[in-house]
Image 1 (tube, rainbow, N blue to C red):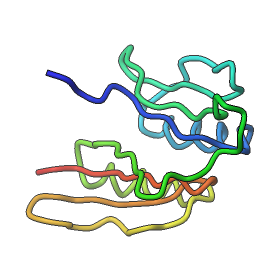
Image 2 (image 1 turned 90 degrees about the vertical axis):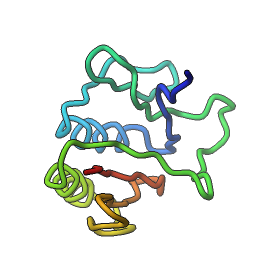
Image 3 (image 1 turned 120 degrees about the horizontal axis):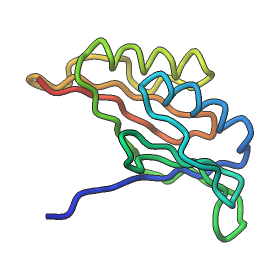
Image 4 (image 1 turned 45 degrees about the horizontal axis):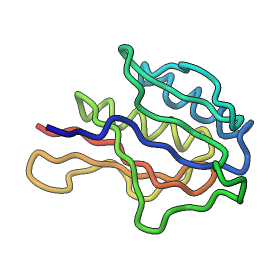
Length: 124
């Protein structure tokens, strides 16, 4: 069976992006694993890579992938609410307030400082 192991977003403002993700991911128990040679940072939890903010490998400007989105799964609706609120408090922009999106499906959406779309959700 194959599963997605980690995801990355690009940034043109790595100092600000690292501060944003240090605070946001740290609030969910996801910690910095190491600084990346691009000037970015790699994060993880429980010994697993989960997320990275990087400077693009080709040295061209980072751009937002149209239709791209990454999601973090949480155990509770309260955790989704907290993560979404934290992102907005750090300067992220709202793309969909926390709420039911289907039976037992609770989702929220925001964009980071570079415009990358991120989702937080819980099921059940």
